[in-house]
Length: 250
Image 1: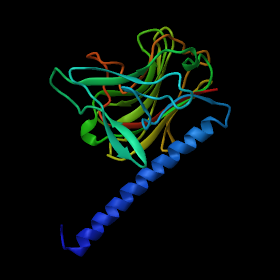
Image 2 (image 1 turned 60 degrees about the vertical axis):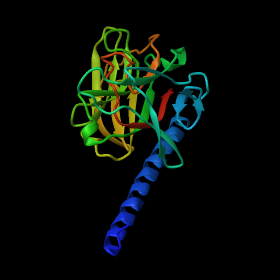
Image 3 (image 1 turned 180 degrees about the vertical axis):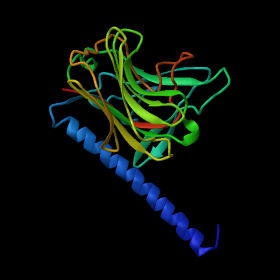
Image 4 (image 1 turned 90 degrees about the vertical axis):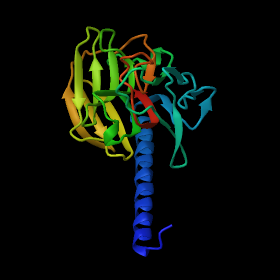
């Protein structure tokens, strides 16, 4: 251990700042959950990853849609400490096949399909600059190639989040963030759709929006997926750490 008092102070300050940042994101996440249940929205699923259920994780909103892992090529999840709970770490970027892949999936359910109704969904993420790829899926239900979809993702090497809504014909509408989250700091991400308005919010602030058709409807029989589409090759694997995933529908 260093005897340099200035170095010790710097380390102590860095530790305090890191703890403060985590506490701030926990507070924002809690605020989002509270808003979702007091502004006409009903939280249909919520996963904190603090409550394991066999190989998966409990749905704390109602318990009907636990998340279960699917994996290939040795893909595995590890747990890390965040605040007074746990978060999940996904596999690091891989440039040469075979690459490890893992995602979490919940069975399809009618109450996860918003149709044309307002929807809010989000997660808390930790991503470093060297963990970005051309596309990483955080939360999604449905696929863009027909069948309709809503999705939260982190796009490109710059690590900028975006929200996508896709109609049954496969027409994609995206609200893109103006800022990156690939800075090795925890951030709360949220997508909001209401009528013709779609927005991406980061740490409680709107960072991008788009106009979508009022009649755009999302309804499909595809499972809810977290951290990737699945365990197949083109799964848009999430590479960082993830916590507090939720979906609320009005």
